[in-house]
Length: 204
Image 1 (cartoon, rainbow, N blue to C red):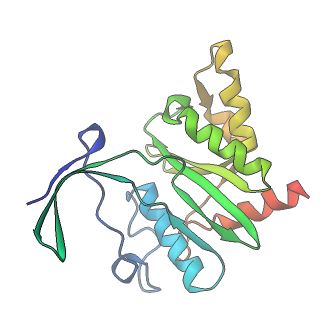
Image 2 (cartoon, rainbow, N blue to C red):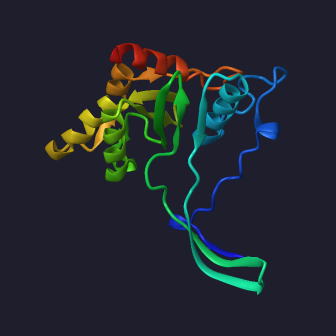
């Protein structure tokens, strides 16, 4: 039996299976409300991939091996390992020739999004990607309100840099103003590339 230690005591979510989890035309748009933001994005990315629209994947979580046994010269058995935090953001890929990189966050707050949900290394990573011409943003989901927004990284940086002035969160009203609300559909479940098209248009 493998002894795996999970960060913050939380076990990873069930592995996404597109054959099992991708919605079909016979399913209601609202049939899977309540699923995690990660699952909703995975559904959408599988649709984009299957229809040759974009190639965007979730980055694998690095694993730190602690103990490995070698019962045979040709085989190794992992006995103990740690799941480490991702080193950058959650997702990356290519769309219309642009490098796409983004993170996905959820909050139960109803009026603002706590900036502590982001980590300094994630902000640094997105800044560097944008310097190279990449498209970066954050998905923010208000789970209690069932609202999802795509917030461009340039706007996220503005709020992040204002923390020294005492503001530790992004008001929902500000996200509504500078972000893009993503409504639910059947396929793709989250048609977020429409918002990405607008970001690309604004950068030209």
